[in-house]
Amino acid sequence: MLTKLNIKNFAIIKELEIKPGKGLNIFTGETGAGKSIIISALGFLLGERSGNSVVRPGAKSAEVYGEFSVISKKKELSAYTDGEGTIKILRKTDGKGRTKAYINGTAASMAALSSLGGMLADFHGQNEHQSLLQPEKQRELLDNYGKLDKQTEEIFRLKTEYNDLQNKIKAVSMSEEERTRLLDLYRFQLDEIESASLNVEEERDIEERLPRLKNADRLAESSGRTREFLSEAASCSEKSLEELKNLAEYDDSVNKLLARLDSAAIELNDLSETLRQYAESICSDPAELDRTMARADKIRQIKKKYGADIPAVLAKAEELRRKIQELEDINLDRTELEKLAAKAERQLKERAAALHEKRTEAAEKMSAEVIKEADGLGFREMHFSVDIAYDEENISHYGGDSIEYLFTANPGYPMRPLRFGASGGEMARIMLSLKTVLARADRIETQIFDEVDTGVGAVTGLLVAHKLVKLASDKQLLCITHLPQIASFGDVNYFVRKETVDGISAASVKRLSAAEKRTEIARMLGGHDEADEISLAHADKLIEESMEFSGK
Picture (cartoon, helix red, strand yellow):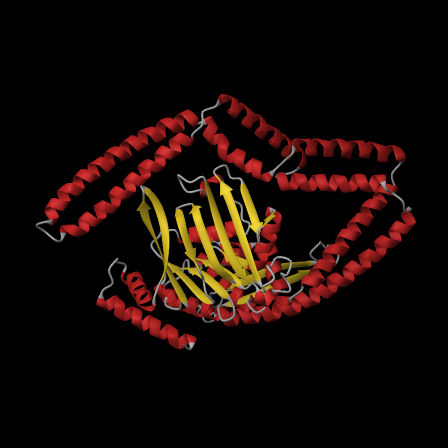
C-alpha cells in the first residue's frame, strides 16, 4: 500500500506530498488542474518511461519519492523491503531525459524498478478499457481469474523445449557444407544487428528531435511571432483590468468579469513565458541534423532487413544466437532427438488439453460473475460470455485456445465480440465489472483508476461508485473522478488546483476535511466556484447515502 508520495518539479508540480490511506482515495479538481499528472508521477516512480518534458520549466531535474507498506506481502517482497515491511523508492530525471532510480537507497536498473512496480500497483487509465479488445489481454484476465499461472508457465516451457528440439533435428539433417553456409550467414546477420547498437529509447528520442531539427528556423520564427502576439494581448488585458477595476467601484456585478479577465491575464503571461523557454530550447545545428538523419536512416535499414521494430530486431538477434549455438554444439544424433521431440510433443498436448479444461471451467464461472457484477451498472439486459475454441494441432506458447469475449446489451440480439458490439461507456463498465470479479485473485494491493467513470452519467456513476467501494474493501484505491456521485464515497478526498507561482503554472493538492469535502461535492454538483444552498443540500444527501451504503 502506498503510504507516502512526494513529487518535486514534475511537469506542472513544483512540490507536493500526499499520504493516501486505505480504502477509496478520491482526487477531484477542474480539468487541467494536474490530477492525472499526479498519477503520471506515480507511474514514473514505478518504472514507466519518461522524457525530458516532465521536468518543470526552470528546474534542472525532477524527482518522485514514494513509500510502500508491504507487510501483507512481506515474505513475497522480502528482497526489496528494509526489514520492516517498507519499500522506499526514489527516481530522478534531468532535462535530457536521463534517469536514476534507487530502491531503499540502493541504485536500481529500470528493469528491476519496472518489475517491482508491477507488483506494487496496478494502473487503469482513461482508455485502458480499450486493451480489453486485445485477445492477449482477454487471455491474461481469464488466466488470472482461474489462477492458472503455473499451468501457463509449464506450457510456455514445453513449447520452447519442443521448438528447440525441432530446430536441432533440422540442424543435424543438414550437410556439413550447408551447416557452414548457414553459420556464416547467421554470424554476418548477428554482427550487423549488434554493430548497430539499437536502443528503443534512442529511436524514440530521434523521432522526437528530428522534426524539430529539420524545422528549427521555422519553429523559432513562428514561436517568436506567437510570443509577440501573446505579450501584446497580455499588455492589453492588464490595461483592461485597470478599466474594469474602475467600473467595479461603481457596480459589484463587474467583479465576475474582473475575476475572469484576471485569470485570462495570468494564463496569457504564463503562455508567453512558456513560449520563450520553448524558443530558447530550439537548436539550429546542421551538423547535428546530418548526424541524426544518418542514424535514423541506419535504424530504418536494420528494421527493413530484420524486423518491424527494434524489439523485433533484438528478438531476431536472440534467435540468431540460438541458431548459431545449435549449429555449433550439435552432439545428439537425429534418432535420439526425434524421440525427445515426440515425448515433448506428447507432454505439450497433454498439458494444453488440461489447461483448456481449466480455462473452460474458469470461463463459465467468470462469465456468470461478470454478468452479476454488471447487473448493477445500468445495463437493462446484458449478456456476456468467454468463448474458447481449442485446436490441438496448433498449440502456441500460450496453449491451444483461442479466447474471445462475447457481449450484447440489446435484448433479442446475438452476442458478438467486444470489439464489434460495445461502446466506450459499455467497455468502461465491463472492465470495472472484471476488475471487481478479479479483485479476490489480484495480489496487487494498490489500484489506480484515472477517470474510470469516462462515458457514464450521474445515475450510472452512482452504480460505478458502489463497485469501487466494494473493490476498496480490502485494497487501496486512488481514483480521479469528475462525478460528485463517486467523490461522495471517498474515505479520503483530495482537491487538486492549479495556480501561477513566479509566472509558472503550479499544481497543488489538499487533503479535505469533512466540511471541505461537502463543499467540494457541492461545487461539482453546481458547476460553480461557490456552492449554493441547493447544491450543499444535494451534497449532504449524497454523502449520507454513501455512508449508509458503506455501513459507516
